[in-house]
Figure 1 (spheres, rainbow, N blue to C red):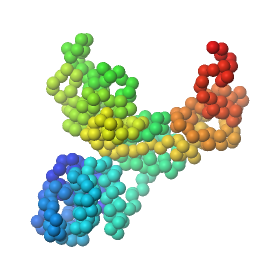
Figure 2 (tube, rainbow, N blue to C red):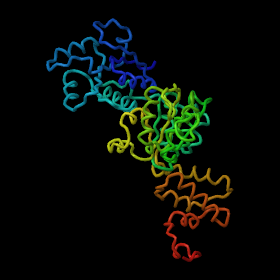
Figure 3 (cartoon, helix red, strand yellow):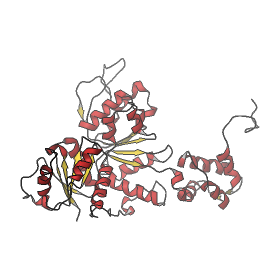
Figure 4 (tube, rainbow, N blue to C red):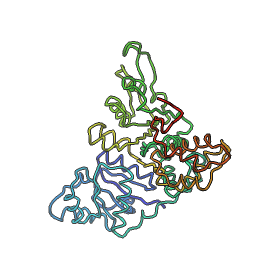
Length: 397
């Protein structure tokens, strides 16, 4: 049986976030007022309870808090608050609540923090997460090669996240395979039979970004015609936005409207149209730093990062290199020596999987025999690409 919980809140933002716990196998009941009596079956059968601090007339005495807690017998009660301070959180816990979670936060943080609070209070209810059989993903995630534990955990999380309708945020270094995973998420989702359209925001000229994404209306500017943008074309499907950190202020405003109300306006039109899309976004920089620098909207940040997941770098999963190399060499029909493979395992790979695949492809061309050796890959890994006669003696400048 799945663990159950209750939330007492009138705040739309808190309610919306707590609904995400369904993706973590938690059944949540919602109430907008605190009950006068414990006559609700769903409340009394709860494994734990969330209470929005806004519903409590907080007082310095213990009486108010004691009366609230006494209504729920021995059920752990956790306070959720949009007004945060270390002092306030400590005060709540000193007065009998089991924990305090500040907003805003991501769904994964809410789950992890709740699990930690329950564990500290002797409840292992959420300690063991349900094991996910990777075979249920079919072939959708097989394209992301690797058998390391970090890759297995990544796929388990993505399988769980793909089954929801929530926005997914992929972040990691360039060359780690975010595009592949975005496609795999779509193929494993309920929208797999609908459109999957993607756009690299960093590759769109800034003056064309809004019309490309949101569409245009005839007469909006010289030469403009009625044109459906990316989102309108992908209605009922999935949109993948790569390099979302490059979004201009105008694009960010449009994205905020979509993520908040599922409404969008074509450039030059005053009437919004309704959308039904699932958004996957990706970033290879620290997006929160851009928020702090006022280069990316904080409200948009929280709306696209409902389900954030970090894609590991290749140096974090070096044991997967033999699998990646074997797959890369299938088309060339060549092999690789043990010394060469060992040399690859000792490289830092700043360009991640993309750098590895480039290295193997180049080495298979340079290799004069049927097996790639250390000399074939050293040329790839140690060249600094300085176009001088010393490095490239055949070229004279």
